[in-house]
Length: 234
Length: 234
DNA sequence: GGCTTTATTATGTATATACATAATTTTCTG
DNA sequence: CAGAAAATTATGTATATACATAATAAAGCC
Image (cartoon, rainbow over the protein chains, first blue to last red):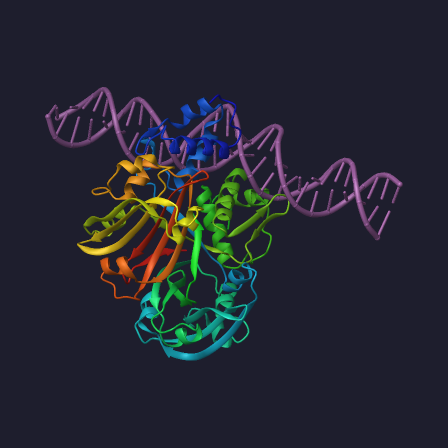
């Protein structure tokens, strides 16, 4: 591999990837330092740095000052799952989106899972909204949402009849961070009914809590219709 | 916000994040260009560039040459799920890891799901390994693996009695990319038995296929014990 | 007006240089 | 020889400059 072949940090990233895959650099092994690689590739150190940083971020390399850069021993593959607004999730599949609010309760005692997720005492009164999102008329996902009106006072004025809480909150209650949990649960009660799922059928469930600093905004359990799965690449 | 407060691209990233969360820059809105921001923050354009690029990669900003940088209209939250070696996944939880190979078949007809995932005809003969990983002696995950020995000839010599296929492949068959799928499935047959799950119990399942270029290496279905979930932050 | 060509502009990236920072290795000291 | 201090080293980052690239806006032309 002669110098001069590489004219962007991406091409250097490619070459480093190739060497890792081809086992020219084995897992756990320290690779040459940036200055040496820069010389070999015929580019500036900053360019090598950019390439190696990107690979470190993706978990393939481990870097420490002075100690150098080594190929990760157990390359933790990071699967990036996109969690879009439900409407877009459906529309992107080329299906027509439908929304139906089921119930809205000004003040209902939070169930254990929601209270725990939001760091509140079980039974704390919260705004509760249940809704169904459909794709081409068929049930797609059941939304079981609990909103902390102390954090988002504006939500109390919304009836969520036309705009889903999912979408309204994203636009009106920006969050600083959130927790997300993927699980499998048995269909039961209201969600089972709305999703046309027989009792006990395995459902793919996403539980998400969003925060504005230290204050919980909302906790939601999204129960997807039977057969739903999420795909991505690593 | 005076100039000079920012002395690293991360601190600029923080400030940009703050403005997005505080709605000083609204979703869909074009933000000032790099040169202006650099002037405002009292730093070089390259520094602003690094900050904005990182935010674009995380999906919060959308950038196009000449058109400028805008706050993403529907900030697709990207949840990054770490998919480590199972042994490490267990050990990181402070539990003791155990492994037991159940069966190994030199040449078995690939089931539909595995064949489809690997782009092969259903029934193509593949090396099949079934195994159970345990945490503190309790069943943790059932591994149902299909290996293409055309792509990984070395696998034919392995009995996978002491080292799991999960771990052996990661060390001996580097992959260029992979597909991953998270789903909920009803417990059934062998996995149900090994996981002490009653028939029909909802199980969290990960299906993964890895590739070396255009050649499929392996397809695996990991059925986790009842109650398992994966968590991350957004 | 509608089409093509030409600026213009914002981002993308490379480079040389300089200094900061963290970790290791060596040297010094009691 | 143990422990502290100093030197070394690799990565982390900032900066000014330069040019590349893509997308848009403007100008020119029929």
